[in-house]
Image 1 (cartoon, rainbow, N blue to C red):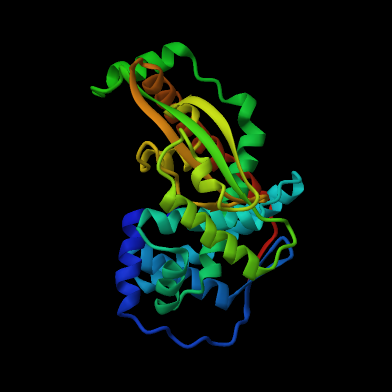
Image 2 (spheres, rainbow, N blue to C red):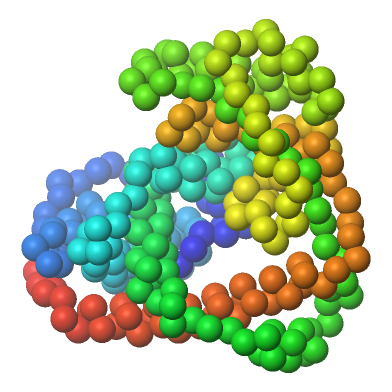
Length: 306
């Protein structure tokens, strides 16, 4: 189950008032396809569920064990298909959750720890989610076909008054380069520089006045893009950014990336509504296929409970 912004705000408030419980010695509770799930894993996931979903201790523990079994099955299948999730992907997802509740990643980590949850517990859940999303996409991409008539029929049932308006952005990509083998102190320095650039940046017409103060900063055009053409969560970051400003820096394999919103305008078009509805219909169908896929894998998995 995907954590929501409201859930994490609740987590933060609760964690501030909750002392972290002591860690007990871990024992193996479940083995899934030769991978062990320990009592520590279950306790940690249960605490995360309690903080984000307000469930009882018993219900949280039951859900935690089943979630961890499913996660291991998902990761095993992803590995079988040659799918791997990088640390930067997980860190980006973690950072997006923090931004959704207006926290830094360190503040979110602090809130989790004060609630008795190791931040790695949430990162492990995110890793499994990302791996499973990629696995399902690879398995069923060619099987999910949404016709134009289905999209039109679904739009007619909706009451969206903005369906004839789309937002078009004019964008440029800015990368503060960080070599792969750089030290942590250098990465931190480049992050500070990225934030400084973001503060000083005030338009795309003459960026050299700001960028010229820093070494190895690359800016290149993305061009005009409809909001529906921009992948989430980048679309959300761009939507929160005023024209002439930069999105928050995000770590990537090449450094810290920001996007300059050089222009924004509304255009008369139902493309956004059609694209959004098609994505929604695809997501619904994908969720159905995903559930059946997981049930099949569960039936064939080796699960030993102790």
